[in-house]
Image (cartoon, one colour):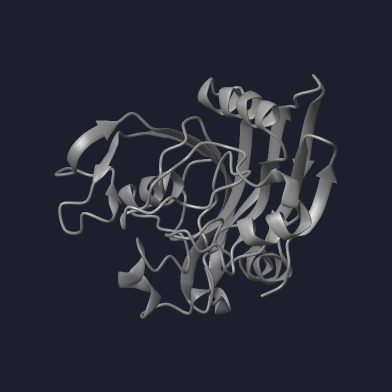
Amino acid sequence: MKDPEIIFENDDVLVVDKPSGLSVHGDGDDPTGTLVEWFLNREPGSRGVGEPRVGKDGKELERSGVVHRLDRDTSGVIIMAKNQPAFDHLKTAFQERTVKKVYEALVYGIMKERWGTIARPIGRSNKDWKLRSAERGARGHLRDAVTSWERIVSGQYGGENFSHIRLKPETGRTHQLRVHLKAISRPIVGDSLYGDNLIGKSNNLGLSRLALHATTLTIILPNGDEKTFSSPLPPELASAASLIAD
């Protein structure tokens, strides 16, 4: 696993490009092999920054510096807080939805419209409580969720239909983009949780990872500066995207 690449840093924050396959934090108090472990090795004075969270085993999670998350298999831009005032500032920005996030994804099937919005509340799957669902029959507390999308290109590769799209989540629910795209029958290529019924039947554009990347993050930093941080598509996703653009 390669280390994250640093995009920006100052006394308050560290912005990195997280590789696919790297968890932000562990499920227990052991942060081995996570972004948090890497962050604390680099910024030992930031240990304890954030809010205490307890895992399923009752132990406190090591989440120092974590303000928001990317799924383990999602790559791209993520911001970490180096001190508590910075954490509090960034947390408020995410809660008040002043942060703008943009993703790119490759999905199964053709997106017929040029752009659109998915406004579907998200609850728990009625088949697997660990998964989320934005479809009829979702259980538990349903939380409003809105995702805007734009088609970059649709096409074929190996006789299959795929689309390259840009996504802008207006809310920040767990697995929101993955769940919303599954709900409109356009799951993300390589999504083992929400597109597993297609992976075994598809060429998957030659990918062995989730085709989801956080490309930009726009946020007002604790010092008052508004910044946009960007990460280009990783080579494997850019190559896959080029296959359907030809």
